[in-house]
Image (cartoon, rainbow, N blue to C red; front, side):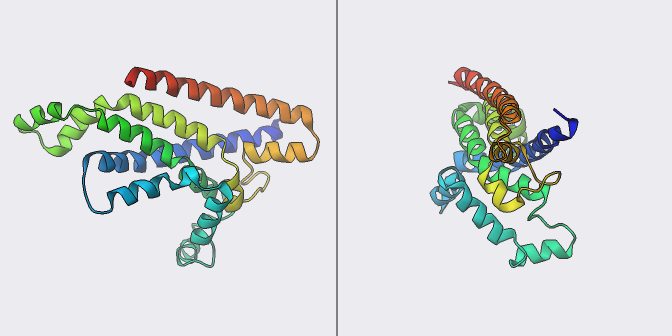
Length: 220
């Protein structure tokens, strides 16, 4: 296969790694909030965070397109500062991140809920601040859940199709990820090339899921 045909793989990895880092930075704090705090609207917030998991990908992509498109206030503002998202690789990052977000939140939330509050209480009696307790006690005890959530997030973001197609389009060399490329190969009846790409993405996904399963088994 020509080297140019591997461009979707490199773009997918760029999109997936960026999306995973974005989900990690936002999902862990939200998981901690949902696991440890009681406030009005907590259940609604938790349900909203899980929504991308149950919505059809095209519906999720439509919501993102309406929110980020040129006709929306946010989309117009992003265009004025030279940072458009729709039909760019950055849009693919947002779509993949939103689609994978619930997997991170649910995995890490379970980890935080499994931390013995007495251990944090001991740290408080020693005069530790809440910030220090989080970094020195809570987070280290939750690392397995965070790693498992990261693996699941990466696998889900790598395979996103519907939301990415709606938000970023299918532009070869610009927004065409592996999933979109495989779709084009099948449509063009290029079965041998499609088989190569399918095998590669399957091996990556199975490896990541095996890692997540192994870590989750140790957590439980």
